[in-house]
Structures are given as C-alpha cells and as structure tokens.
Image (cartoon, rainbow, N blue to C red; front, side, top):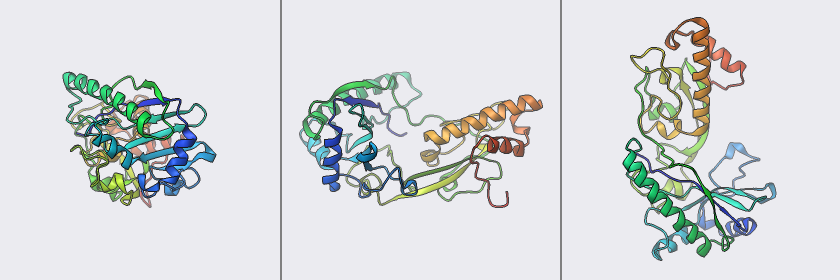
Amino acid sequence: MRPVTLLFRLGNVDVKRVADWAQDHPDEFLADKNINYIRRPDKLRPNAIEPDLGFVRLHGFFGLVEKGRQDGVLPEEVHYLRFEYVNFQHNTVLINTVRVYDIDGTDAWQVSSGEAKAREQVRQIEKFCREYVPGCESAFLVDTSTMLGVRETRHVVGDYVMRDFDVYDDSPFLDAIYRNATYMPRYTEVHTPDGREGALDDLGNRTGAEYNRIENSVPFSALLVKGREGLLIAGRPISADHKADMVTRNIPVCIGMGQAAGTAAALSVAQGCSPRKLDISVLQDTLVQDGVDIGLPSGG
C-alpha cells in the first residue's frame, strides 16, 4: 500500500524569500516549475510560482534535502520537500512531505505506530526547514492534521472493477456519473510503496517529464457492491484495483462520486427501487442539471 502521511503547517515563513529562491534555483525543482498554474489550467503541473497572484506550490528542494539526509537531519524516507500551499497573507506553508511506509491502515496498532513515526518526522522536517531552506530560518510548527493520512486500504468488489487502462486510456462508460481531469504521470505511481518517492530514480517526481493530462470517467457500476442490494460505496474504497486507485482516490473524484451516490440514493427512495435498478439516464440527467460533468461518450 502507499505510504501514509501527516500534513502540517509552518508559520512565520518569509514566503517571498522562499519564492524568490525557488525562481533562482530551477534545478532544485521539477523541470516544469514555471508552468502557470492559475492562468493556464490546461498546463497544470505540481509546481507553480505566481507570487504576484499570491500563489506558490513547490515540489523539490532536491539538493537541500539530499544534504539534510546526509547530515542526518532528515530520515532516509524523505527524498524531497513538498510545499503544497504557500500563504502570502499569513506567512504560512502547508507541507506534504511526511512518508511512513509499510503501514496497514486496517490495523489499529500499525496506525498508532505510523502516527508516532509521522509526528517524529514532522519535527525532523521542521528542523530541516529552519536550518536549510532560505526563508524558513524563523519558522515554527503551527499545527498538524488531526489524524494520520492513509492513502489506501480495502476496496469493494463491484459490478465493475476499474483498471488502470480505464483511467489512463479513458474507457467510455454508458453509465458514467463523473468526469475527472488531472495531471500526473501515466502508468507511473506517484506515491511508490517501496520508499523511493522523490528519489533520484523517481522520474515522475524528479523531472516532471512524465506528467500528462489525464481524463477519465467513473462508471456508476463501480459504486454498486457486487451481490448486495441497497448498498452504494463512494470515495477511495470503490471497486477499483491498486493502479486505477492512483487516480480514483483523489479528492475531486471522491467528491463527484459522493454526489452521485447521494443523488442515486435519493432517487431510489423516491422511485421505490434499489440503486441497481435505477434508470441510469434519470440519475445522469439529474447530475447534469446540478452542474456535474459526467462525460458521456460521443453519442451517449
């Protein structure tokens, strides 16, 4: 399974200095760091430096992180630093860098152990930022997420099991209930379970060269639990294999599936039928009326 994480924020960060340093050191970040995140959404990438718009998102600090690891400040599991959101107004940064491997999210003892390791990493990364990252010399820990972030555990087996080719090759589904669009490496795991995430040979997270726009539809049949009536599953546990889960686990997709499941439940109650027997066109029409892009195939 993918590594677990713990998001946290640093305060009292000179965010302008961080942004200026990032612009002056392009080799420290993904090769596509200057892609404009806001003004050119068709070119969305993990990195973005738009200080004039108050927006900075950085994946990298490769050389600094390597030195921190060699100096024993950072654990071996940390290969790069991810500033997911830099707040110019409050001088804070949200950091998504903690990586704890080999944790079974269905085992309470392992989750407890993982949280202890994650919180230890938070302190190590905080110390690293103060000592190595320009602009973070006076930074301090503001807060952490309230619980461990577990990326993957169980999946149900549904009427249809989504596979990697469904998301990367955009399989057409006549029962589509949500249309997803994102940028990520094709057929390449972003959060590798083997501890290599962000390492030198992890081209997806090091160069950005493998990032592509990926569009795919989610079928209603992946929300229906095989052999069970009256049960809908939305979010990360839907009927999808490990490789398809790289895309279907993401927040926008989970929100879309949640809306579809809730709408289907309400329509089923109104029509006095189980979700499986619901007229899919009625569900789709309702979602479209509510502003959802369901992405039906041509002619559908």
